[in-house]
Image 1 (cartoon, rainbow over the protein chains, first blue to last red):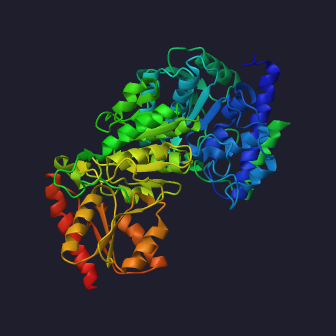
Image 2 (cartoon, chains in turn purple, yellow; image 1 turned 90 degrees about the vertical axis):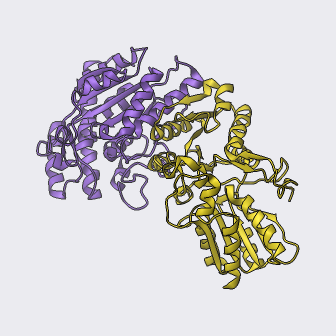
Length: 282
Length: 326
């Protein structure tokens, strides 16, 4: 990974803002979909695809690429927008989100968009797919494989037993090339995570599963990149980064409101949101 | 059709169907380095120990976690491996059905799912462990191939065929625990998607029996006894339930005019339902279904249970007589 200069931080912050603009634009056109999660994860997606990852948008099937496995598929507007801004497909295509015949299915489906690492939507199965990928890679390339695997999970999907089955196996197998990034935004559909089914003490739980655990501000590019760097420097266990994020980040009237989990902005709300984001651009 | 000449003998050799899976997996593992095995704490019982002992570096013990087993396998398939997952059918695909649907079938990742301990013949363990819904669960899934071998030799061939590079889709193989008479021999042909006639009566058949899995032997025995009563029955072994051999099923219906289906599974949604779907749209004939009629299983010996639920030799004979009376 390259060093993170001040000018790169500025570049990343601007890119994340552009991605937020694309998220809002695509959701307004789609007239359905999730808003808060995608906005909250825009900084992490940007840091990954524009600084951290070894990848080549011209060669999506490059065998030696790092893998990003999105478990909570419902935040795909940020995934699609990041892929488009990275050059995997035209930015205009984001306007087809959730439409009939689109490659950008409401939840990701790799039959329609084969460059995706997996299809997702039903919660709780992304981490174990990442675990399977790392185990397979280790069989072929040994522990010193230079590929990194990033599993992106929501906090809410830690309600799912399958997620914890995957932690157990990853801890047992000491999968050092695995980094889990949890979108700790504290909301799920029915309310706040700590009201629905409390996860705290979250860090302690994850440590108990034999993971190296870090907690960061998920909107601070320096912290995001530094935490991933530290995760890669841990050789005897897999890593998890609890990225504290603000749902709806960047659009003040959406921030921290679980009501924005599963609905799109109306045209009017979208215009208001875009105005705020475009102001930040200037 | 080349079959075991001792088929009708009381002392015909009996081998558990699952044993053929273990042997087939070992052979496939020897010819293809990409084959990996995953098991959920049932390695010997599901016969995966043969593979594990030979290729410990390609075997992953996931613990009692069938949902994780299916999804880890999907991830391994994404990296070019050919994973085989094994457990009891009640747990895989019973418990992890959604994971199989989304991460294996929806993703079109080739994973071979070996479902052991299907049918009532699991016996004394009781109804919790008797999978009689698995054909229905798996055949509704797009991209999924469903195999149901009739004996250990066919199970071995089915496993090798499923793992061959010709097959690109995920595959479910239905296996059984109990010893089952060996019907086929090494050079009985087996091909995914092809059914085969396993019993030809002396005279023109007026009933066609389509049987699958562990009950194929009972269907053949029933046909033999019916022949002595001048009821002439032809028996088709349906080793692949999906994609079903439409030509063979329709040809049998045209030739015999009446069909009886036989399976150790719920009537609802099972192999018989599959046959009915084919015949309803191609060539309708009277049908009877031998299977479990909307009941759960219970403890007992396999023979007791097969008789109690009416899916043994006598039940098959009655169904043939009934379909003839319609």
